[in-house]
Length: 167
Ligand code: RP5
Image 1 (tube, rainbow, N blue to C red):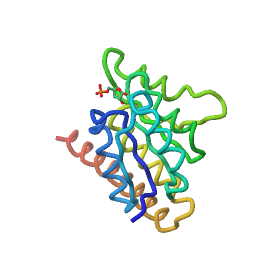
Image 2: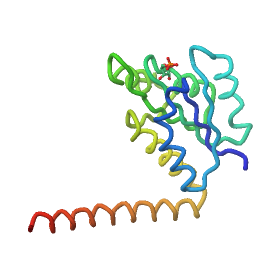
Image 3: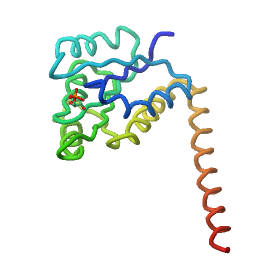
C-alpha cells in the first residue's frame, strides 16, 4: 500500500522513540514508511525526500530528532504537507535543546511539535491519524472508539483505586 505517513528520524538511535508511533499507525491501519535522514548529515537526501513527498502520495510527515533538532524544520521548509516534530531527549540538556530547536519555528513555516520522548512518538502518530481522519470517516470512527476505550480504562482504574482504598 502506498504510504500515507512518512516517519523520518535523524539517527537510528532515535528509533525507540518511534516504536509507539509505528504501533499506533499499525493499530489504525495507516500505511507508513520510515527513514533515517539527517538535516545535517544527509541534507540533500532529506530535502529531496521532503520536496517529492506530496507527489509520492505522502499526506503527513513525522520527524524525530535530538540535539540541534533541525530535521522537522528543514523538512517543513521543503513541503507544504503538515509536519509533526518529536523532540528526542539527549544529553546534556535532557531534550530542552531538541524541544526549542523543533518548536521555535519562524513565522511562515509551521511545525506541530508534540511531547518530547516516547509519549511524543505516540502523540505524533495520533495527530497524523486526526489529520487523515478529516477526509476518512472510517478512520474518524476508529479515533472516536480509541478515545472512548481510553476513557473507559481511566474510569476502570479509578474504580479499582477506590476499592483498594477501602481495604
Ligand atoms: C540527532 O542527533 C539525531 O536525531 C539524534 O537524536 C542525535 C544523536 O545522533 P547519533 O549520534 O545517535 O547518531 O541528529
